Image 1 (spheres, rainbow, N blue to C red):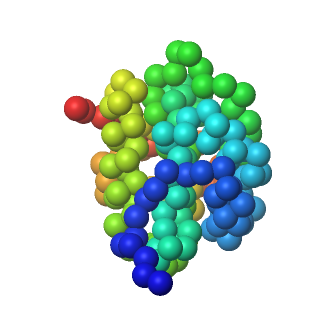
Image 2: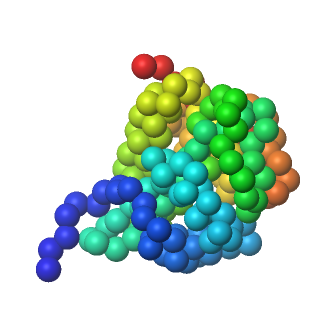
Length: 164
């Protein structure tokens, strides 16, 4: 059996156990409950993707509209997308070791940028954890301050202006 090239595809409900397992492996104590991921998928499916390498799950992406001034806490339910959302919040981009260095991160940002433009958002916000701020800086994000303590020591709030 042959598999296509490594690629992002829209996430499905039945992917959530794989997402949770990858989150546990990648994020350790900063992992989130499967219910948190399920809610993000239900609230904004156009921001939820799974990365596959040789037909196997190797990463995931969650982004959703939110309030720039109030990033959601880690491992917390959103309840709803705010009607006055003013940014696309890139909640989580996680890649297993076999997917790192493949261009998956840059491709994920292309997906997120397109979603932001589609829904009329002029910026993307994120919280960089685990030293990922250098990765995001290389893709054009700028530091905008410290993050909520729920994201762990050294977490950094970042933004990227979106231009059509």
